[in-house]
Length: 316
Image (cartoon, rainbow, N blue to C red; front, top):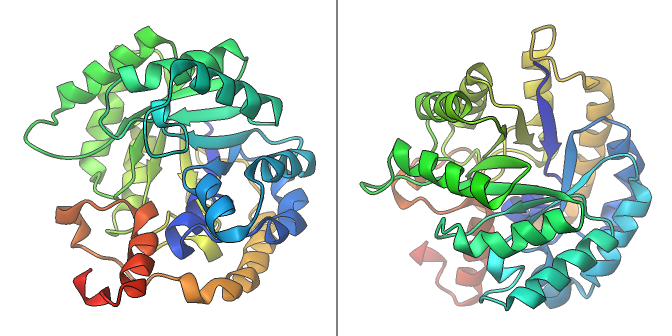
């Protein structure tokens, strides 16, 4: 089975590596090359990007979406949506959720990964239903964590509830990089055994387990995975796209992606990233403390930046 690759370079990669500061002007020159790769989808919107566009970059997030769609017409565009919170920090009324989704689809969004930090399906229902009603792909999400209250049955029950709500696929979102390879194998195997659903895996590289976790999930039958182009990968971010493509080449899970095309993209971002050095996090390798603290990779550089502004960097 071919594995679909979603590259997160235009959203979660820079959110995790340098506090969501990547500008549209640095995305558009490489957009045609990204569109030509053959990704299953490209994550480019949602999460903290909406806030960062307005608060820090002086950009119109809706214009960003339209311009990216115009520049990448062949590849499905994907976003991260916080369920009833949309892209804000409180719950919004159902009619606001419906209208937001309608506008996002109209402006070019194809795939909506809908999650709730509390894993409460009621907080995902309105958004998922709105996505499907407007003809886009609704991806429900299991926000993976570990605790005495979170067992395998917890995730199976949530999967069933999301399927009852109505989804086109389900993502396992390991935002902190704490999903172990063996736990991933068991979780993917059990979901695939019990339900007929397309399954996607998102992992962060923070703790050093992500590449192994992706491989075990692929062995267990996962359909797609998230990666980031190598020059925008690792530390607080994600496994490198090229490494996984090379690993799976010639196997039954061959991605079909051309590693030479990917190298050209990596070379571009290797230079672009230098502009954002001031926003980079301090992590250079892995951080095993996250196995206990469970802080999501997508918030760590933002947290570091805020602590520095308050002269409290030593509190991290």
